Each structure stands twice: as structure tokens, then as C-alpha cells.
Image 1 (cartoon, rainbow over the protein chains, first blue to last red):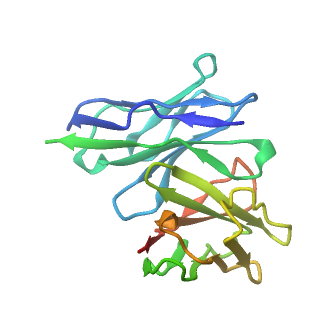
Image 2 (image 1 turned 60 degrees about the vertical axis):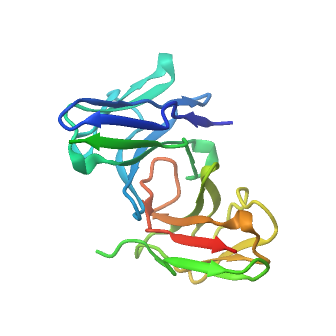
Image 3 (image 1 turned 90 degrees about the horizontal axis):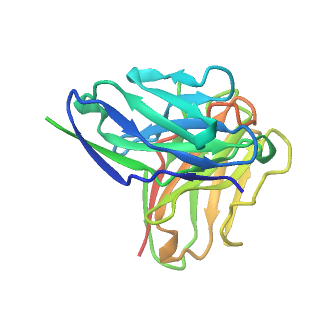
Length: 114
Length: 115
């Protein structure tokens, strides 16, 4: 069965610093990978997704993620964090034999220090 | 255009009562999903609908939970005889069609509190 692990429950970074949020997945074939962001009281918004092709994926709000098959990882990065990036971030995996349902990680809460 | 909407935004109920949660997907989206977000369990898939096909109910936690989608649009998630462990945020999402490559657009959720 597919699973997703986000090892960091909570991360704090200073505004302007770089950010990397970790995501590891378990799936036998090439997964469909997603990063979503959830601001307080809001629904989830898609940041980026990976299905195939170039392993470095660009998303909205200056985020990018890199798919590394050998490490079963799909880490999210941003070179310079803004205070408005404070939110909860979810990594998710979909599978072709599971319809469209997504399996989510536990989430990483990001705090940004001024 | 309008996104996914859910109602009510908040619901407080007493243990043992039934509740209905509503989801209006994006117009033209044929696939609709329900997820539950709770402390300690994270985000869990509950059920999805695709057009007129039989729904995938594999994520429903018990037979107290049911959902329907009328006319291929609006969906209602019903929880009968609510328990305190049902307290959670219930999120609805829709996508153009079913498939792992499709982007799911999420609503703001219904926060359910069972006293």
C-alpha cells in the first residue's frame, strides 16, 4: 500500500532564509506526487505536482520540488521564505490503480520568524 | 470562477445525533472526493464519486457514514449517531475527471464538533 512520511512535524525558519520540507513515499511504481499548502481556516491549495519527465518541478509562489526515485523522496524547497508562507504543508501520493484518491502525509507546520 | 463550496462551515452537535454536510463542486467537474482531517489521524480519504459510476467507499470508517451525489453535482455526507471521535474537519474536493494525475480542488471544509 502507498504511504507518505513527512518527518518534520514543525519547522521554524527566519524570513528570507531558505526552506526544505521533506517527504518520503512508499509505492511500487512511479507515483503521482503532490504538495499542497493549507493556511489557517482555509482549504488545501495545490503548490505543484509531479508525474513524469523532468524531476525538478516548479510550482506557484516560488516553490519547487525534486523527485528522487533512488531516495523515494519528493522534497519541497524555496530559496527565500516570506512571512506569508507560514502555513501547513502536505505531501500526497496518488496511484493509477487507486482512482484519484490521494494518500497524505501528516503535514509539516511552517512558522516564519521576522 | 467559483471554487468548491461547503456548508455549513461549522457544526456543533450532540453525541448520537445525525449530521449532514454538503459539498458543491466546481461546475463541470465529474469527480468528487471527501476527506477527513483530524488530530492524530491527519488527512484521510473517505469516498469518491466519478460520474455515474459506483462510488469508491473504501475509506468510510464505519457504516454510520454514508454519502450520495445527486445529479452528478452536489454531494451530501451523512454521519448517523455521531460519536465524539467523529469530530474533525471534513474536506470536499473535485476534479475535472477521476485520475491520479488530475488536480483536486479543495473546499474550505466543515468543522464538526461532537459534544
